Image 1: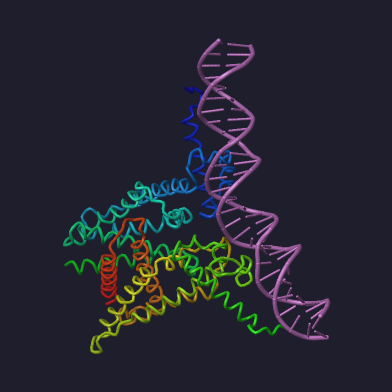
Image 2: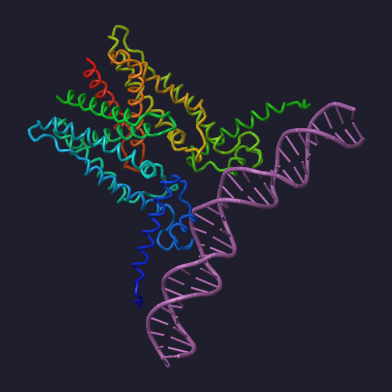
Length: 212
Length: 212
DNA sequence: CTGAGGAATGAACATTGTTCAAGCCCTTTT
DNA sequence: AAAAGGGCTTGAACAATGTTCATTCCTCAG
């Protein structure tokens, strides 16, 4: 049995951490395509082969970065949650919270463009399954929206609300995605922010009207 | 000067065509990552180096496929346009057309998943500009939406309508994107179709209400 | 018929991710 | 203290890939 001053398990953990950080910085600097084995090893100060002692392959490393990004995103959404006036009617409170959630999502994507993009750009090599903890993490985002829909569309049952939450999230995601894409022509961030707010609000109004 | 039975220019054109078709089939079979130089040459029945006599690199070839995909998409949208009852009020006609447009977009994406995805997955290597004909092609899609917004939000000026069209397109795009993504859990196509219809309709209603 | 010019070819190169035989270092044993 | 054992680390080597370019082959004017 080993009993060195620094246990093997801890050293492995440190290496994992250093590699994850290095990958994160590489993504921020050069996008997903910038994550290459040799620069990674260099940045983490380890041997080329050492990468493969803590990750089965680079895909797994990128997944680790994605997990961290999702955690950061959730923290950001929590921090950005607003507290409507206590005497506001529940409907109005839910509306405000929903708009604030969408804007917080946009803000995060804007502030951390590169790693946010990596979250969605990264496609696993053909035939590899997405780990279920990743699916679970994504579902949590949908559930945030779902929780706010109750007061707005009380006529819908839980299953329909879940679908609607997913749709709403997707719609906002699409706006953020194309809005931040330089490819389609630049758009001032402030303008994009207004557009997201406008569309979310309009959609809520429309949904409420139908539900009534 | 050359004057062979088959002029050089024509042979080049044929090769371009064969390579584009081969790339298209490869994308359909294995996604963007399936577009590799050697299989391409094999499929097109040409030498490896021949690829580089008609395309500067594989990126350009993929762009050629994308151009074709966009053309197909536009043709599909044209073919799917509906003609509302002639006595329907303009507002109602525009609503129906807008919903039909969104559904046609979804249908195309579903029917040609692989090449549709390729349209958006493909990122140019760092620092390369998107050709402006590509930007122009994308803008045409936005303008389709824009044209239908007139009767629905008459209070908005042209610039605001353009922004709104972009937002609407993005929202539908997001729904289609995440809806077809197996990653986030499967969703029956019929359900997705209903969801798109529901959200577009709700959004229109909400927008009209605000505009009134 | 011939040779010059240009076009096509695929071997060779550069850059990747990934593997694994070899060596190093730490622990245990004598 | 020395040596044997064994797991961990290492980076050279391999396979796959995009791209280039010296060579080859073809075409056709003379």
